[in-house]
Length: 581
Image (cartoon, rainbow, N blue to C red; front, side):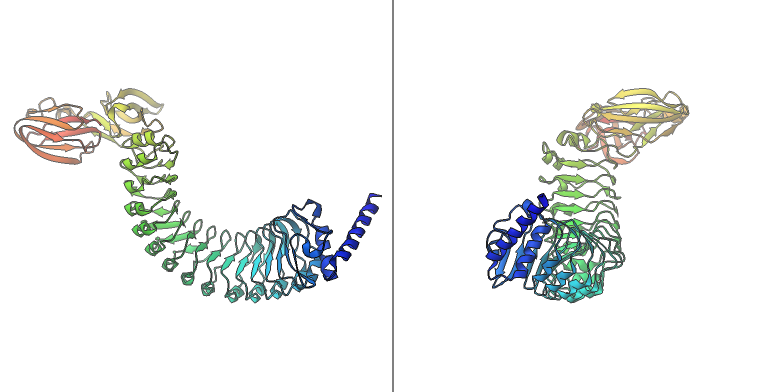
């Protein structure tokens, strides 16, 4: 009984449509009824006047003369299949059913719509099947968007027949095979998206002939081979996305010709060689993504010309040398990622930009102090990552205070220095903030033999292998761990010439006095006569040499905190000096 009532209701609707259609072609109105039946009209967001008023008043429908010429039901909760009878709307020029819930295949009858110049089925998610060559019959198409569906098979070569196309989007589907060479016929294209999909083969160099392109995306496919240098001819490009393929070889320097580029995505490939300095020509660039490749060499200083850059993504490569300070010329960077490379040296102070949200320098070989400019982020919750480098507490105290959520642990092993019967390490930071836990290494494990606060010097009581763990009361996230050192106590004669030489050394008398010790800024020295003094770090590197006669001072304000040695080169006497900050 319910089915009979539904049939009567539909028959009444048809009668009503016939009455209201008047001058509208009957097969056009019936095709629209089929669309309604196939896509569950009762759940449409808007269905004003459908089946109740003249066809020209139905929501989303345009009638010219007696024929339906436009259907725009985008994002209207249509749910169902596209009916084959839609191919009867032979005067249709505009069809937009994007962002609905359509499934099944595109009916072959669509090829009858020879006057169509706009076809958008984007975002239906479940349209599927192959794209048949019949689409090549729609010679008047200027806009074709099938993005975000489940279309499969190869892209038909007949796509090259659509020479009036300016917009072609086949991305986010399951297409396989190669990019058809016929695509070069689409000389009017300004927008070409063929990914994500499963396309393979190489990028045709002939794409460089599509000189009107301003948006080219082949991202997340299986494309291989090199990036054609001919892409440098696409001087109108504003977006170039080749990310997520298997492209190899070097980045062609011709990419530097694309001076209108806003976004350049070449990440997640197998690109090698150096970053071409010509990329510094792209002064309009907003995003530069070269991450997850095999790029080597240094970061070209010319990237500092990219003053409008917001995202600089160079992580997960094999870049080396120092970070160029010219990167500080970038006016308002938002995201800088240089992680997982082999960068060395110090962090340029110019990277301390106030509006940065993420700075990732982790997993490199960086060392030295954290720049004082990083205090600009105090209280801002910025994401800073500097772990897995070669930093000590020198500067980490500042970072821990300014950016409490920063990630700065772990760091590389620090070396242990032996001077006579003394072991010491340079851990940086304010000495009074540091605690040194010395361990003796045995087959049974590590045994704690000393815990010393505020002094990096340790006097082993027996021969053996030692390591030290250093903690800091401010930079609490980090524990510095030393390399193991094999300690063998020097002979008595050698001890007499060691750094602990308050005793006579080689018949030479300690003839100079040093105070205060520890010293912060000025070290006072008294000598018996004229003496040439050298200040060295724990590794024996000479930091300064000064001649003093009688009384004198040495300015140590700029010296790193920690243990040092002051040697009287005239007598050979050595004093241990602790510089505290």
